[in-house]
Image (cartoon, rainbow, N blue to C red; front, side):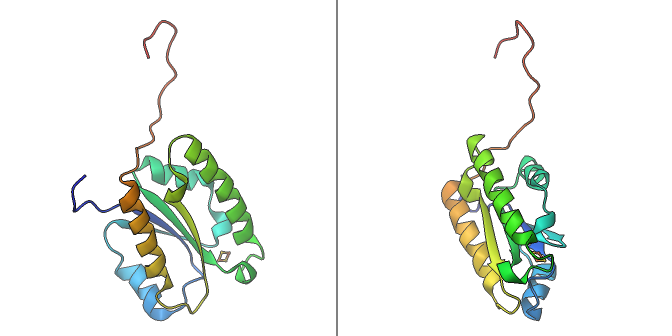
Amino acid sequence: MTKTWKPRITLFQCQWCLYAEADQHWVDHQLPNNIHLVKVPCTGKISPLYILNAIQGGTDGVLISGCLPEKCHFKEGNLGARRQLDEFSRFLNYIGYEKDRVRFAWLDLQERGRIQQELAVMEKNLLELGPADKLTTRLPLQEGEAA
Ligand code: FES
């Protein structure tokens, strides 16, 4: 691994949780190239398949940024997402995508600078873990075929 390696991060961001204007502008227009933004109407709308798709596309880590538990616009969409994605990250860990590569962050509407902090923590953790092994789809072996 070279010293210039930058982990690829997919940021799933609830559209309601970043109202601090400067932060929203930074996310919309100044994200570093290694961060791919996916805005969602609520973290409760994130299918585990979206995450799997990002991983198959080569992302080294996934950060899910949503509203505080009591401030979700869809009542408990974020709590359901948290439960579902915790379960799913256990499955990902089982198939070789380390659990620490998927993080969840609750952001309050006016927490200035928090998204940058969360991304910095994510990037630091991923630098320690190194690049993720790309998950590939493999056809099952046919009878008599060598593994
Ligand atoms: Fe933001 Fe549900 S509306 S997480």
